[in-house]
Amino acid sequence: MTRPSVRQILVTTLLLVAIYLPGTIRAGTGSAVSGSAAIDTRLPAITVDNLPPNALYQAGETITFSWFIAEDNPSSNPSANIAEIWFGDTFYEVITFSPANGHHNWQWTVPDITSGTTHLVVGCTDGFGNTSTDRNADFTILSATTDVPGPNNLTVFAPPSPNPFNPLTQLRFNLPADGPIQVTVHDARGFQVNSLRQSYQPAGPLTLQWNGTDSAGRRQAGGTYFFRLVYRNAGQAAQVVRKAVLLP
Image (cartoon, rainbow, N blue to C red; front, side):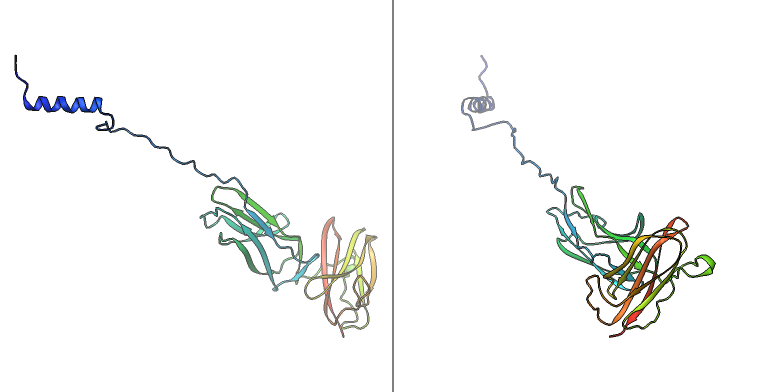
């Protein structure tokens, strides 16, 4: 019988220890439990501040748009947060803004363009692709463009007379077609202070007056005022704006 070598004895001893003494020597196996990944399905909170009701702005004037954002997981995409100007259904201008929470502002210069449905739309997309949008109410831009001639080459809205005036001025119109009209008065900030006529009118001449008061009959401060006529021309909505100075 062959006598076992010292090496064989050591190997056998190690195997027996591994089998009968758990925990002393083990094969290289193991397991672990990872934590569950958080998924954000909530939409960003966004609120756009409204402009004053029936706001009206002149070309070249600056408007301060503002909005508030709250989001737990902002996106790192530089174009995730945008503010857009729309003229009705027509896109006009866009800016991107930082994903930081809190208030944001845009100092926007009014272009020389006429639109009755101009508004701001703000969109925010978080890091998980959730998107929210909000918009402000429509506002009107005063264009430097004059109105087209009406029948007999008369202008649709003649310049107010007298101008400057105190206590009243006359507004003379020559409507090109039957249809609904609206005549409003706005102060230099664009706020509507009075509505002089909102009715269906036949084509032809129309004369109105403004005595320098608001819709409640209160006397307004001296300064520049704007008169806006919204009417129908060739089946399309149109508008003309004139200005006059109310003397103190």
